[in-house]
Image (tube, rainbow, N blue to C red; front, side, top):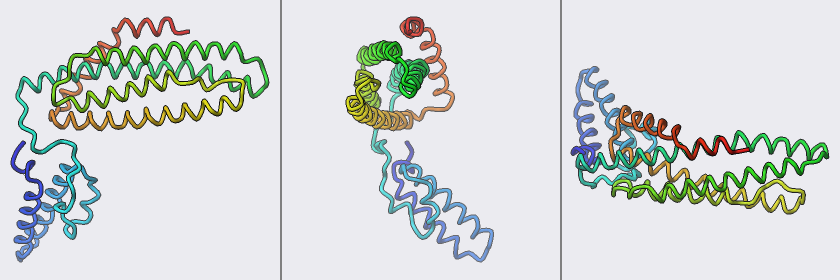
Amino acid sequence: MNWFQRHLNWTSVFAYLIWISLDFSDSVIAWILSGIFLLVVSGWVIKRKGRSLWWILLTPVFSPLWLRNKSVVDQSLPTMTEKERQDCLDYYAEEKKLRLLYESVEQLFDKRLGKYEAEYSQARRHRREFWPIMEKIEESYEYFSHAATEIVNRKKAMSPAPLAASAMCSAWFCAYLDYEALRHGPMVAGSDTIEVALRQATAKELFANHKKSMQKAWKAEREFRKRLNLSTDEYQNIVDHATIAAEADEWLRKLETEFP
């Protein structure tokens, strides 16, 4: 991390001093270039502070100097050694594989269970027999509750996270725990209207908790990638290897085969 990244406010001050000095020039070109320079530097400082680039529209009346740094990345963190960075990359590859397994399970859930729930709704609407469909839905919930537990167990079995990845590790662990709670939650379908309404309220609360924890996990992962200064090629390489590993996972293949 260079001096400018560690001293964002001073960077903004120097940019304004340069802009002011050039602004007194009689040259129109110097005046235009100074304005462009101030906008570029202000935008860079705003982005480094983790704020919206819409703030740049207030330049030069409002300086990025007055914006609080909302970036989760601690600017005072020491430089990471090459070995520490490689350990983080190796751990991130494990984390990415598990996430792809989670996403595959969710896609399978939406595809298979969605069909049964649509059949159930039509049967209730037309007052047809719906108990056979209910049995399929119950069986589906049982399969996916076991799948959610498998995701949590695999997260627990992962190698210890490096210090730089600890925040991301904890955030994703919480997200998977909330996912397990969601999939172990009550089945919404049923014959009793009042009971179904209560189940829907519980399911809605569990879903909201899971969604919130997922958002926190994605935010922690983005900050982790910033901490590593991960390039596009490095990230794509991790995704490609994780995709291959997830596609070859025996547990996922078995789940796809045995799911009714």
